Image 1 (cartoon, rainbow, N blue to C red):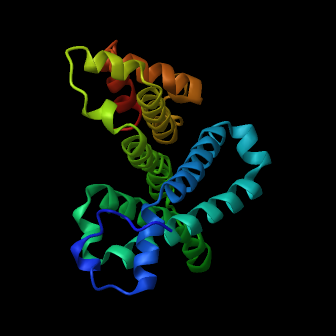
Image 2: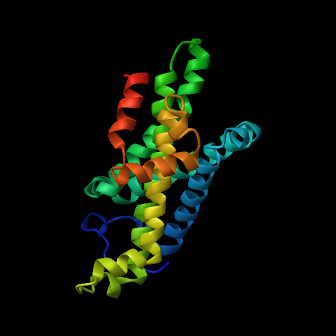
Length: 230
């Protein structure tokens, strides 16, 4: 594996194995693999918004969620080992760590509830389902990294129509679609029971999200939800 050109100072006297782990986690192939996992995870999150599909494939979805979680935890451990305290210098790394922690709690909480006994934790489960959708944010970091490696010249280029070209850029469009789907999934998880007319399905949630972005009747949506669930 080729030696990275910007090895942090805290790794100058590091062992060969630690340097190997660092180069591995910073490589394009590793980033591409993590991106694939995130894309697959995001697609499954979107598919699970369909209640019928979610019920039929419940066991398979649960198994795949566990595999994704294991990969995320392994990635986090490798980066913590390679970077040490420098891991926390990046806001993206800190965000990744919190997402993995919330995902781990999401995995452990049902086991704890079953072992302790049945009690009302509907609000907690609803909040944790929201954090499952937030995992889609991880894709933005990986996309940004890959784009930086093979698009430095275009990124550094400055002109008056820079923002317009970014809107037509496939990478930027993909980021926008990820954000839209992520917030649509979050909205459906949080408000489908309260306002099924606007959040009953992913398609309805996407339309509602577009209305909110354009500030079209947002106040009526707010008051309708508040009246049902203050």
